[in-house]
Image 1 (spheres, rainbow, N blue to C red):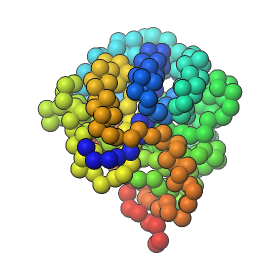
Image 2: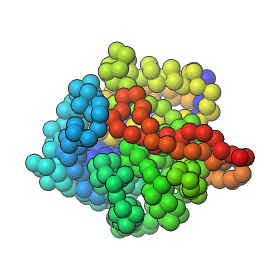
Image 3: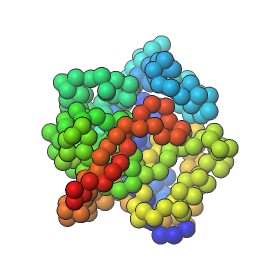
Image 4: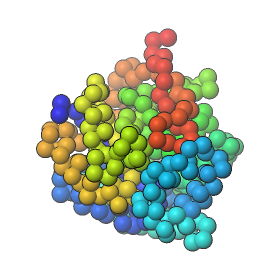
Length: 309
């Protein structure tokens, strides 16, 4: 495999993913000397409410059948916030969150209430969006002892309102989008100042069941993306409920193979800091909500490069 830098973006979406998946991934990364960036929602796990996406998001039911969510997420997670209580995710496990930092990884917030953001952001008032981010920052600060320096939007869903409000918090960067390279976002006739570090590769749940991909061979498609791309930096989002759960052994083998092939694992925040040493080289790009193969609903995607126009 050709030389490439790979930043692992570890998204925690659920209580069980925090309780079980984060420690498993931390142990793996320590064994392989890999540093990553973890993004945690510090509010309630209402994953059970995702079932209502059947009525709102075309393709959600198809994805459910294709990916077998009971296997990936478990019954408890699928009932959180409906038939089961909705415990807080990051706030329930402050010592696990602190251990992420102690082991040299990066830690940021993945919204506050993941399901609420994913399902209702585009309907929220500016006050509601601001309150969501404020709650996340407040809970993170209480648990960690200092405010977060980065933000990752749940489900890569963004809006002009969310971009504007993130700017108010002066995060070092955000990872709210899908795209190819770092940029400053422009959306709704506004340009925003928070650097975007987009995810560049498809996720496992997007690939599973598509074109014959299964647990045993799904990483072959990711390797092909790495081989065929001209990008020097890739950002790959993994989920503690999937790669840190049902597909842990598959992920373990894939990461070990990449290490042996000479792939350099980097922290996303370090790459963002390097970009900011010369902001003039960071382009302004349009962001549009679009559909991606394997995903239900819309995603904020990097589009036209407007630098120099």
